[in-house]
Figure (cartoon, rainbow, N blue to C red):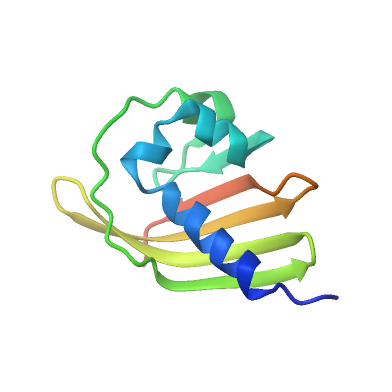
Length: 121
């Protein structure tokens, strides 16, 4: 297996963080450029969200803390990575969550195939 280079690791950190920024998260053109066609998410509520539900979320302020805490790229192979991190977001109160994302690299770039949010125990 070929290890990811620093460029790919930095790119993955940037696009993962873009999920938590209002200007990119609610930009449908941008999101379609990074989401796999069969993307789905297990939300922190336990609900399952399809790409269509994910893209139709109403534009809203996201008050996430950066950088993403404990950000790690776990290499599955040279074209598949699992990213894990902890996110702190202020809603009515501050919520901390564990997050994981499965990214697949194709000829165009990295595509997000799956995302999961869980509340820490």
